[in-house]
Length: 324
Image (cartoon, rainbow, N blue to C red; front, side):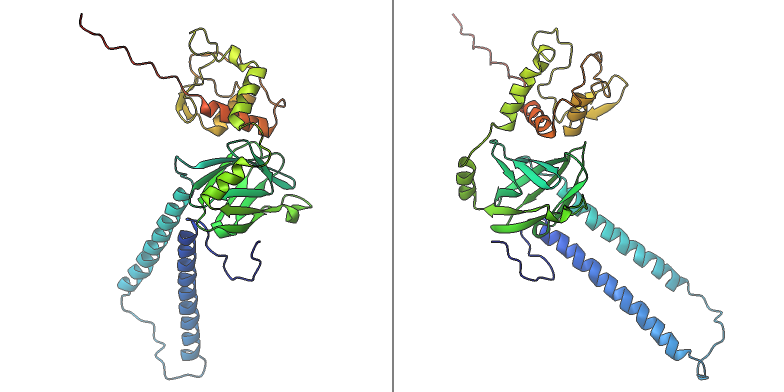
């Protein structure tokens, strides 16, 4: 049951929350201090230099105020750079998920959230996650711009059509929490909401194994890879491949024919499927046909899951030679 009680600030339920709140309250305190200081100074001068008060010296000062001028330049500079560094640290932390994070695929569309877990189990407008384990969301939209917002986790990320976005969190409390779309996405935008259910790890594993599960995304992606006959060109071991081998490509740097080097992340792999001639790997010809319009976003995510699962087989250790 979601707690709908009135709160000035949502409760903290993720590892991001305390850091974001600390920066928020620091900014609030600085803003209040500056506001009170400026308002108090204005009020003091209004009273002191009001018309009719002849007991003040109105002669222009001829002295030097260098120390004061340096202070009001250096102090805001140091303060603003400190706030920038603090915010940048939180930002980088929010975009660097741990390697062992649980991968969940997210497809947004008017007006629902579709989730798929690594074992293939799907959900709509509900996301079940374990407490105490990082969860990485790979997100894309089928239509317009949406934004995933979970207030108690202090996460909000735009979900764009045509480009993958990512966010991660680690829940620290069990319970049911609100999930909103924070970007106006159409007439029924306000209905595009759901809930995140945080469970104990054992309870989550039990839930994950129950119900109706679809194929794991990597398995469905392999089947799709073969149906589209991608394997006829992307063969590695024969040495006759017309396209670059895909084993261990995901996440690695790739040299392109135009001299650039790019990282084969989700967006590069997606672009290579839909627009193969956009970034051709050095040493290969742009022979691959485009699959733009033939695959929906869920199928693209399945292909990506399969590509990221490809690892080059390790060579078997050579047998030990025994002396006769």
